[in-house]
Image 1 (tube, rainbow, N blue to C red):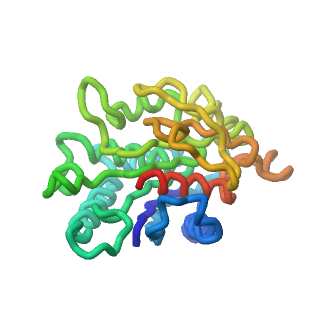
Image 2: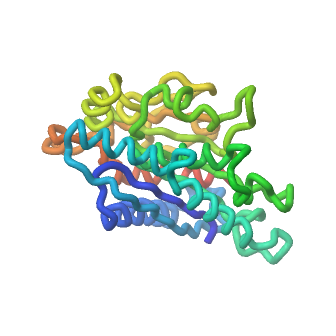
Length: 296
């Protein structure tokens, strides 16, 4: 294994559907790299992904009340003093850190420091991940994270990339809801070594129509991030034949306009969620694979 993906699903997703979507996404990335190795030269030493899917009860009626209920549940699962999600992720990351191969051993992995870690969320799953990672980085969090107290300073355990497809959160969430995720004058922030990449699409009714009514404004998945404590970069979702240059993704926070691809069908555009879940495309795998490559 060279790359570990931890995936958290979003609203209205059954457990078996979450596993199927996550598996399809990582499989697309693996197959894309196998079909076009010349497009991802930094992965020449190998790309062997593994997947962990975090599944949680996210079903509700497709109503305003149902949307608010799942929003509050996603928050409660990760909020300090309330949820267990931070403990789960902290112990998972600490376990992986403790069992990474010795960098001085014969090369088995592409990364001399061990496996690369990539977080992938969808919808409320992105809120879940952000809250959990932020909370785990807090000074009073339990000492279970390898990357918060590294045994060997030369092997810090960090998140190499984080992608959230159609995030269900306010556009100012990184100022108001996740103030410790990025470095600030008050602290060093969570250990996000790579970028936080957010897709958005104007065809997303869940974070457009429903989010507007539940929280008074459209969400990140519809319009991208707004105010944030770090500079942002704006780009578009690229076709699989067009490479992502480092200059596009080497930023703390990257907004990716996916409206040309995440459109849904004529039927789903009028459905309650619209194109909210329409991210299972080769272009999404290309984005994940490019982030893995640029992490090297």
